[in-house]
Image (cartoon, rainbow, N blue to C red; front, side, top):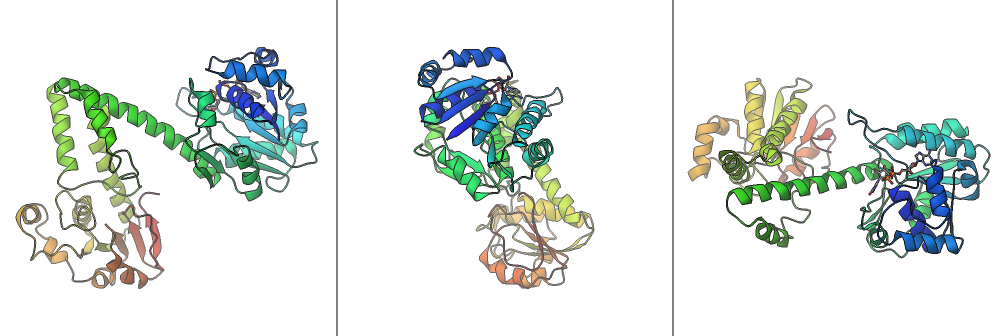
Amino acid sequence: MNLSIFGLGYVGTVIAGCFAKAGHRVLGVDTEQTKVDLINSGRSPIIEAEIEDVLRDAVANGSLRASTDAKAAVMETELSLLCVGTPSQPSGELELTYVRRVCEDIGAALRKKTSRHVVVVRSTVLPGTIESIVIPALESSSGKKFDRDFGVVMNPEFMRESTAVRDFYAPPKTVIGSTNAADGALVAKLYDGLPGPMIHTGIRVAEMVKYCDNIFHALKITFGNEVGMLSKALGVDAHEVMRIFCQDTKLNLSPAYLKPGFAYGGSCLPKDLRAMTWAARSRDVEIPMLANITTSNDAQIKNAVRLITADRRKRIGVLGFAFKGGTDDLRESPVVTVVETLLGKGCELRLFDPHVNTARLVGANRRYIEQHIPHLARLMVESAAAAVQDTDIVLLGNINDTYLPALKTLTAEQRVIDLTSSGRTPETAAHYERLCG
Ligand SMILES: NC(=O)c1ccc[n+]([C@@H]2O[C@H](COP(=O)([O-])OP(=O)(O)OC[C@H]3O[C@@H](n4cnc5c(N)ncnc54)[C@H](O)[C@@H]3O)[C@@H](O)[C@H]2O)c1
């Protein structure tokens, strides 16, 4: 294909060289003449392993050249890949000046172009940016209509500096966000033969995925560092700890615990976090991320209460209130905390959980109820149907197939608020909303 690549920085230079090497005809565009001159002389404007050879060969065989002429680049190519910078402003807000300007440059060229053109955004932009900035800027500068006259696809870049060329040939995944299947397929063709999953999705999801990845990577680094600091203070070999930790691909390095849902609870996670943060505090070790997990978890409980009480309707049926489905353990169940808060706000509650039967509760679990929610038994009913009858809101605290028939009986006047992380939308006429996602 004929590709124009806007922005010859770390991303643009690498993909310009690699796409040219893969057999595409690539025209790189940058506003900085020095970068353009460097590329045209077969040299790299960035320090990056292996890129010098790739660029030298591509320029020598005529598959890559660079220019400052945006208009000519659009006219001569079918696809324009945007790789301009999206730095932070002092407030943290994204600086979108470069994105806007490059869209205006491309749009001005599109005014005269008769064939279809697809703009592929590779810069990292917040969800909604393509809809609110990129498409309007292209439409107003071109006088043309998105989708009918030109396409826009979000194709985030996952390469890492220092291994960027190798990452190009072995991406962790390729994500293509589009509203037009043909445009998405055209962009996917660029990656023919490369390993890793090819994922087609919507534009906003593609914008978000890139942030989700980077935030998770930052979180992993911070987790490793804080565990390292704690281990050192406790006289433990942190590298040995993390080496063992990483061998657990069932619960640790896996999709487990990563579905958006509700706060954690139970008899282990809250207690063990408290013990570790105490251990750090008592040794003057700062672990702000780990120490604030509880704050975030508490915020999630407050978010749930806020959502439930938003429209001041007071009759609430709760389906599932053990700390997770499939157990009768109520200790530190966040749903129980929500129930208590709602009771305090004067709500009428009816609770059902197929696994919780007060007559059968014994030991620590029974003690927990006696100390924390002695009035729980009075609120419990015998079936899901009885819990949802004559309610304004049905709160799904955990998921169980026995709730499904009761959910089917709800009417459009009722609300279902789902705190679970199942991702399943139950069949119901009620207004259905997840706390998360
Ligand atoms: N650097 C990385 O490892 C990496 C990885 C993945 C994603 N990203 C994202 O990719 C984007 C680009 O990052 P980068 O590190 O390559 O940025 P960079 O600052 O190195 O390069 C941006 C280039 O765009 C050029 N430019 C600005 N306005 C232009 C215009 N109107 N027309 C043509 N060129 C223009 C600049 O002169 C510069 O050369 C950012 O959104 C970044 O977050 C970066």
